[in-house]
Image (cartoon, rainbow, N blue to C red; front, side):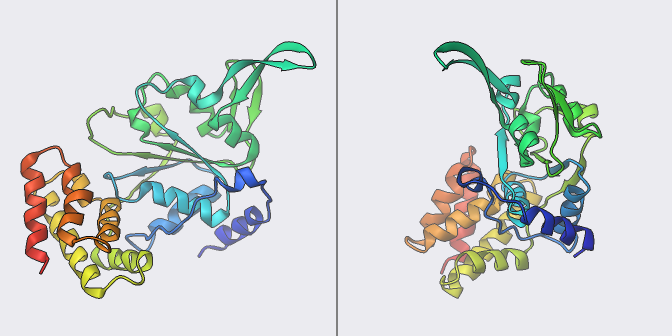
Length: 287
């Protein structure tokens, strides 16, 4: 691993957080699909560049962000984007409080401002689900200025040196919109594909060390079949989700594998024909 990463990690690990902040540190456990993705993302974080994770649903983008948080033992604030996201959800809001017998207006910091001030990680999930007019407020946060003028209070906020930003997008999904070019250009972008067979095996064996070998082998076979049908255009991307595969494997430790695949994978699909295809593929693997 690059010396610059190890040096930065040592500095960030030396920081101390209170109990509430410590609850925001990710659990880690991301398994990279290739030899460079993990270190390249860490390098981008270390040189204080915002990171954009691109990939299909369930490919591990959020787990990757959580693993960055765990690697640096650094609290992470997550923003889940939608069309209803507004400036208050990002920056915070005004409220009325009682202070020394007086009614005063106070400002409650939102996730962006909290992460900036405290040197935490900000993770913006499904950033292309937000309305394009909502996000330009973050432009000065994401570029070389690393600062923000709070539109609600006028306060000028300069980011803590350890403040880091990761964002994720699912491209081409219903409800998403193309990212504004000015926003996109502020990120370093990484493609996060589904794991290969060996990486998936490593993940399942680590998550379920006591699982029977036949269960792991069967789930890997089903996963491989699902990915092939996704590539052939017969299934939606979510059918090959690693997250769903983990759910199915855990469920299969307690109930039949066929039912586990049905509940954890097939029933999440909208199309009846796709649900049937998933179950047919599972039956061919389960003996």
